Every structure is written in C-alpha cells, then in structure tokens.
Image (tube, rainbow over all chains, first blue to last red; front, side, top):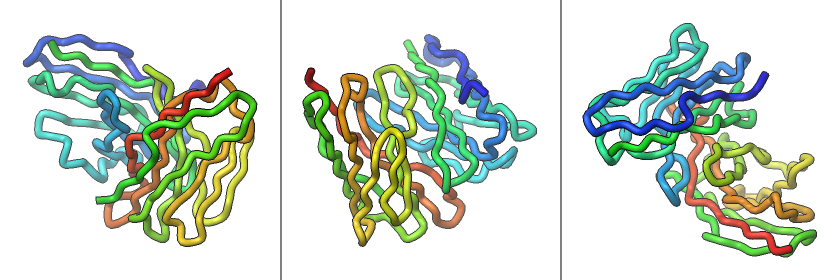
Length: 113
Length: 113
C-alpha cells in the first residue's frame, strides 16, 4: 500500500467554478477525514466518514461543499461556486480508528483567482 | 471549544535532545493524544500517540502528565531532518464526533547544525 493518495496536487480555478478533489485512503482503513489548512494555521476538520456513511460535518462546511464516499472506498470533496476564501490546502486522512495513528495524504492545494 | 496550546517556535542544536511541550486542558478521559509533524507543502506525518502511559517508538517518546492536561514530545537526538512544524492534537470523542483530531497552530522546530 502506498499510503493516502490525493488528486490533484494543485488546482487553480476561477471564482465561481466548481472543483472536485479525490482521496484514496489506505484500503483497510474504514475512517476517512477531510481537513482544510490555510497558511500558518493547523488543519481544521471538515467532515468524517465511517465506511460509506458521512457521520459528521463541521460548521465550516457550507452548503457549497459536499463530500461522498461511495462503497466506503475513495472519497470526493466538491466545492461549488468557488470563492477566493476557499483557497487553502485540502487534506485527507484515514485511520482504522481513534486508537490508531492517522495517515494523511499530501493534500490538494486550491487557488481561486 | 477544544484546543491545544504550544509554543510558536523552538530551536535546537543537532544531536541534542528536544522537548516539545503541549497543553491540552480540555481533553476528556477517552481522548487520545497524538503528535504529527509537517514539512512545507506536505501533509502531516504521524509521529506518536498515547492515552495515559508514556509511549516510545522509533521516532520519539511521548510523556503524558498524570492529569493528562499536558504532554511532551521528546526527540532524543535532533537531526536536520527533524526541522518541521510539530502539532500536538487530541481526538475528540463525544456524541457523533468520533475521533476528529483537533489541531492548534503547532510549534515550528528549527535545528541548527
């Protein structure tokens, strides 16, 4: 297993466009998390899946954000009508559970121009 | 709100031990303490985690205070490759929040040759 993969690594988009990011977790990890990180700050929790069920969403996740994890495998995070404030690094992490360490992907850096 | 508090920055000399402190006064009895480190433009990398007892692994040691309100990450012999931002986090287990990691701003560790 090569760890958690995220695609793309970088995305530049015009304000108002929709973007979608993909995360492939470690195959035996049933928990998957999305975080957002801006410059100089620690990652902020966005949403969490256990298998295919989305169990929690942060209040940071506006209606323009949606996430899926079909069949409990890979996950996608979509941002509709992007705004400049959405510019950030979007990180995905997976784990077998809270008693274990979490493995993060390298992130997708989004720039909204 | 749950949060962790760490020094903004610390400096160390190569080959010397480093003690990185963290306060997590809002931690509850079932929350695990995790440490991650992050290099620029990369996702966080797992270092170590624990619940109550001190923990050792090949990367570091974790010393947890008896009341669990603080912990210290110990790098026994700092190398130049240990220069990174170190995040002290803990899982948040209440209601539906199962295992979300709560990050602060981290400590930027510089290692001098």
